Length: 109
Image (cartoon, rainbow, N blue to C red; front, side):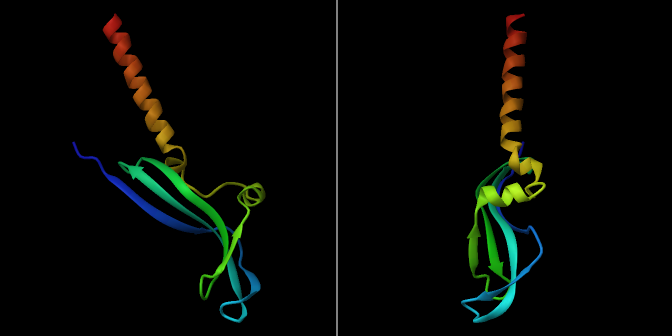
């Protein structure tokens, strides 16, 4: 049996661009609101997310500002992190607990 273990980082745009002055580019450029998160996976099904942050980044140099997580998520309909990464590790723990319960139930019978 083979297990796949991996990790990665994703940057997801979460809204329309906004025109702002960039102090690094020294000109008015488009700033993209983004969600950046790191994740770990086991067998491509069971994952967990860490290092989640919302940011407003310049489209030219990627310089920007961090956004408040609670306020940003409150304004959004749905957080764009896939289910298997948000809750996958909890599902894995639930399946393992169910397996242990079935094992002990059959052993007692």
